[in-house]
Image (cartoon, rainbow, N blue to C red; front, side, top):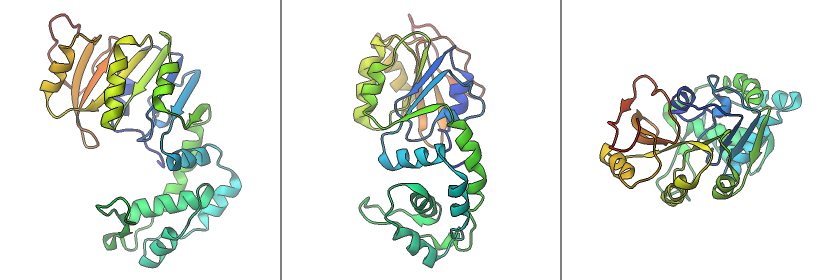
Length: 252
């Protein structure tokens, strides 16, 4: 899948409330729109902060037969020469951007300095990633009725409301996490909020602040280490979740 959902998409799907509308203000790491176990809403807003990821998802959403034909003509086999050629592409949208992004992602090694370009991973020499092309039609179907936006996530969050709305909140940056947590108590929409958590003590501390938390649990995740999840609706915890004991005054 070209734009796979977060590793916790299954957890979100298994613990979702009833909804008519889904809003994802922080969807750079993936979207549940592409998760097959998620019920399709009447309205679905996916906000992408990163302009490159937004351009890539917009390309997939509008994918044409001509685009697919052109993509098939690219070199999808890993080699130093192919890597250098992909690295030299300067396109900001369309098939060239799609090819450059995924070629470098699959066959590159990131430098510690974010300003330094990636280098070719010789362990991937000869690998073929053309199978990526077979997932594109499926991804396009998943994004068919989705509204893609590239806006301030907090403005998206502020405009989302109503008990029939399901907010999926997966902020990654510390300042985003702090801003979202300051707004949780005032939300009228149903929300699923998750963040990195170093230890379960973080969850108890959050619950003891008096915030409106109906349930919290932690889950091991490769992407987010241990995550803390908060919701303001009742749900059945997914299998294999490490459920945190309820705090006094907070329903589990």
